[in-house]
Length: 226
Length: 161
Image (cartoon, rainbow over all chains, first blue to last red; front, side):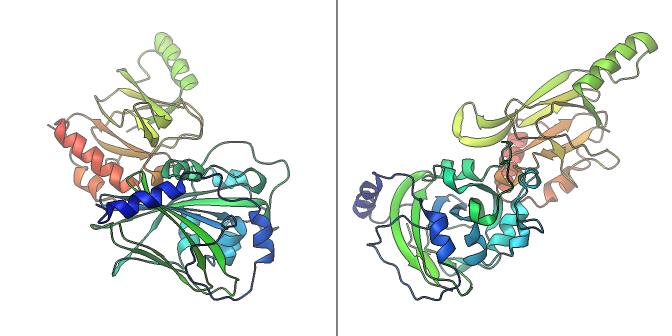
């Protein structure tokens, strides 16, 4: 997966260096950002913290994708039924997540159509996890992604949390011969407002580009080729 | 047929052997560490070590919760016909004794799709009888790539000859 333009790649990498934790004040944004319709395109000048963080790691034969977002966005942006993650009373039972969560991840990503170039690719969930939103995890490279989505055995919060109390991390993998092509993720219409997205694009663990996007309801996120 | 025993059960069984004779299969004990991170490659997370084991019938494999959050369980379709599946509890050490030759694929339930899978080959007559069936099992997520590495290692080390 050679980058055809080495100089642009280097510039892009330099711009990304002063990264801090990419998402704060996220739950508040999610709380007010539900059920609105908006139109959006890619914008490079968004300065606020992104609502959704995307890490792409292109490898030989596979692409790994990690998403970090308020757990409520699993419903509002990805159109997942909340019952995939919550109990009847709306709380999330951490203990129920400890024996694997790929099925929840698959449910979360079921409405997203993914293409590498012209090829329709199927992303399979590797795992997903939720964490208290006041304690979001580092999420800036593929290792962060793996750690964030890995099921752990920490104690559940004393008070069972609800979706609005949580930040979600999910990881997916797709297999393809040519992973250097543009990656397009097309999202379902859910009647939501536009959301800000930050994409960190890695080539086998090496950061090659960072970009900001505004994702409209039903929009497509295009992550350029390498 | 694997016997799923926790450490306490094994020790009790060994005591019973001394008193009542050979009730528990004898053999070599092998340890498999269940790790959050590969000790030699920090990019590799959620891993069984060793990834592949070649053992003799009657040997016991002890799955050690070196790091927390993991378990070991056989993968449906990846054990010989007639062998009993096993499933250990998360964070618990478990000992499994293997008596039937064949291929045994296993995984960590929470981290299988992240690639936390492993293989045990029990040597002996018929050890390749379920090879093709085991290879044909559809793997989820990153387990597919890891099993490709595993089969390559099996070939490279001539573990089935």
